[in-house]
Length: 116
Ligand SMILES: [Mg+2]
Image (cartoon, rainbow, N blue to C red; front, side):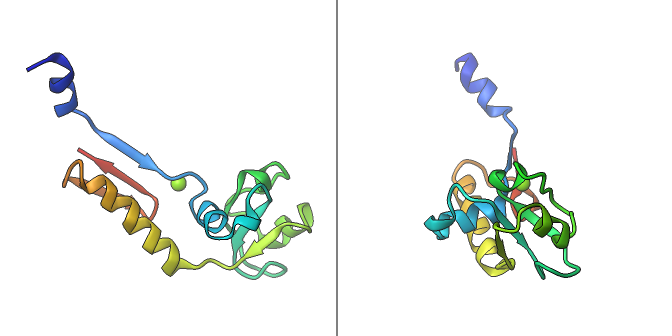
């Protein structure tokens, strides 16, 4: 048994999908790619930003920021209400890929897990 295999037996893999909800929206809607995408409730009201794309971050938009502030920073942005069922579906697909490598999975959140 070589060194690399012994190392592999001890591996811990942590995956945290980046800008997950916004990335799913950009994948499902090619016209959103390369554009500021802001996912959250109630664009002009009291909701907060759930996730935003890197293009939106360039305008200073961040997670948990009031949507009204995000709208002021980037009025031409693409504001989308969360589609949680879709994100859960993509999450399951992502985790099922990892299950091929190890059944020992600790799910941290919808887009984040650790495998041992
Ligand atoms: Mg993440």
